[in-house]
Length: 336
Image 1 (cartoon, rainbow, N blue to C red):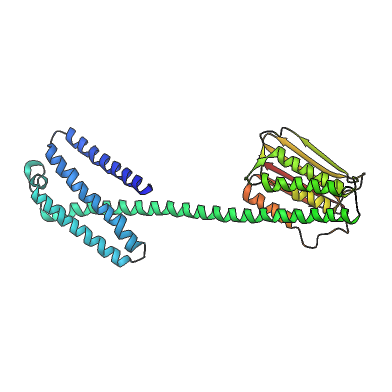
Image 2 (image 1 turned 180 degrees about the vertical axis):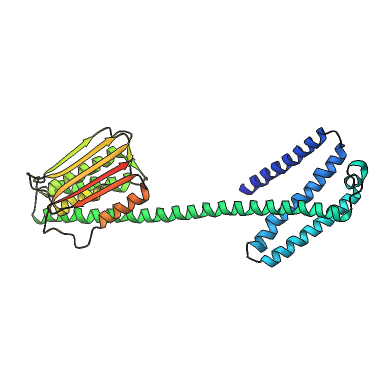
């Protein structure tokens, strides 16, 4: 279908060009329609044939393959043959061999004129070919880059679920080991969280309200883990309806606050604030640091979220992390 459309538009273009010149010349009143047909249509088709000979045959088979000498040889040969062909047509159609005052045009004068015309058509076809190839290559490169980024994002997203599940199962294991009565509730809460992660997060963006509910569920799960002795100030301000965000983007910061911070200190609870202002999300979380609770495997979640921000919100976010002596603070501003 694409090729048929290209043929259609090329045909329309050349027909329009030839018709335009025939119309302009005919309005001059000095040429008959028969002569104009010979000049613009017959010779125009010959020149267009040279155009496509270079565009479709010579450039792909020789110039693109860096066979420069062969390309030059064939171009020169084509110009000579086309010139002889046009001179033969000029002899057959006598009116073309005369200019004003009916003076005949000499062979070499005609050869120079037709060579110049042929070079113009060769040049135009070469420019068009390289322009089309450049745009095609750019589109191919963009498609390849998009495929690479999609594959990388899929990989990063696939890391989130096992990482989250690993941490959550550790928490539930602790409850089960302690034979806590809240273990069934924790498992139920985890199932709700996993349902969201499996079925709601397949799109590139999700409703912000659903993502915030997911964060609420995670915090509730952590409170169960701490025997309802986890202290966290969670505030959401601003209009959250009709707002969308990349799923599972904020959870890593909250996971780290519970994993590495002190959550059971009522004097200095985990502080989590989310503000929505004019299409921007401002995220703030701060926790008191726990000196004995370190993740030996490294900050997989933080590296993941930084990379996802780079890929999905290029130039639209600002992330500031302060790792101080007693506190760990994350501030993120994001254009939704």
